[in-house]
Length: 70
Image (cartoon, rainbow, N blue to C red):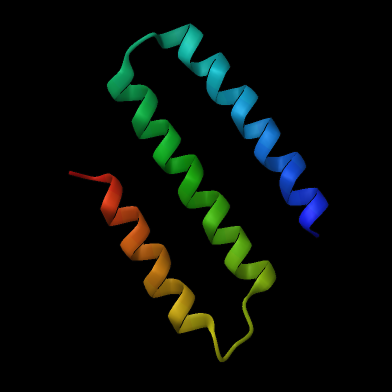
């Protein structure tokens, strides 16, 4: 599971570099990067969280998403 997540992280890193080369606007790049990070955290909570820890991981995910928007 951790191996697949590392492969997914590398793919997202390469895709984000491609997006940065295409758009070359930092604001749009960071919005897309934030969306990708949110998706990664969301799927990692699905994979790793039990039903008892689900509310805690959702709170962590929401606070992590809010910390990016300043």
